[in-house]
Image (cartoon, rainbow, N blue to C red; front, side):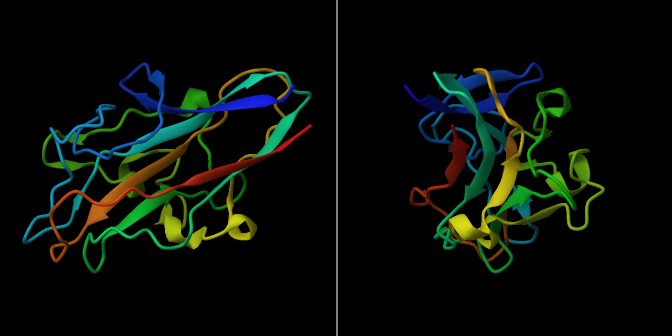
Length: 187
């Protein structure tokens, strides 16, 4: 047998963790893949999605799962403007992932803009820098370590926190799907 890996998204104060096959970023703390509260592109000020917490729920039969990493292909093809990006929380040292006990609900002005991870998420706000463009982690060799814990039971891993930032020259409209990849070592 082997381990199973389910991607989960946390929402609400609890949080409520739900298994997802895709994540739509909103200007609200919503886990629904709809267009009700889209990320705003404003003509005079940078706007943000509410941040999104994403983890892996481990299951199945395994001896150990460790070294959970995350990366993308280095080219998030969304047009969110000159300074726009998909950013991810970063730590100065150690894992970039957030332990369950340090989960923070996404906040902001629903339907308008989310609070900035850089200043409002206490797990990252004191780091230098608190976030980076996820394109920095552009292949498996350059992946960020989310959770170095040696997991020996079925449980949730530490979670990443991502957020879209839009600049005033971004292009409105539904953006194409992009893939963020998790990798782990399994025994």
